[in-house]
Length: 259
Image (cartoon, rainbow, N blue to C red):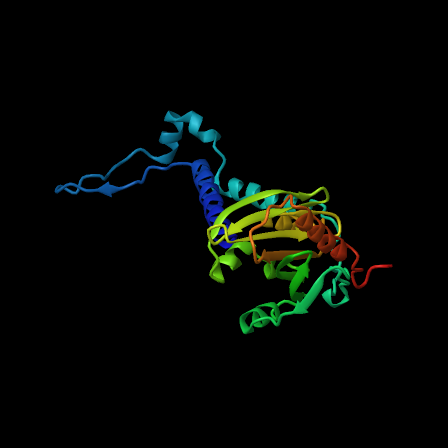
């Protein structure tokens, strides 16, 4: 989702830069000579000096060397722009998550593909649970990561696991929680997800991505929930369950940060 657009943007920028630089390069007519059968003196096309006299406005264009120097200077100037200091990302250990006593949970093991994928990224912790809460049943997956590469847009994962997405919308799930609400399998199931950091929640993967790029939030947790039955997001049990999950994550103290 990110690699292809970035590649296209890089290609377009490089092409535009090259085109602009070529517009600054002076145009010279090639000089050729030939002799007639009588070996008379060679005839020439107009020389550069004559061409410049006939086209004085062209002489104001900077040379290719000047254009190169301007480009190098601009790149060096960009390196002098101050950046926020890079700090070591805090690590959130999901084993310390304390579920509410109102929620009954049962651990689910990650499948081999998930285990192999998350093992590639240091500092990533995961948890998958079956849950029961006030008549609600389903599964919840939590993935805490200091890098966006271990996260993804959950609707892609749901599709990969065989779910059909009927409808999806971003909304305020609770007063303190912004997420995305999905209807699955012709209305037979519902799902929701969000990304949660120490300061905010979002349903947009790109907000999570740019939050890391601009060093606003070092660690995020992906929360993906699938309910076994169709529900509305405004139903009281759903509201209570989502609030409990959100608050439980907010209580975890990142490793390396003062308590």
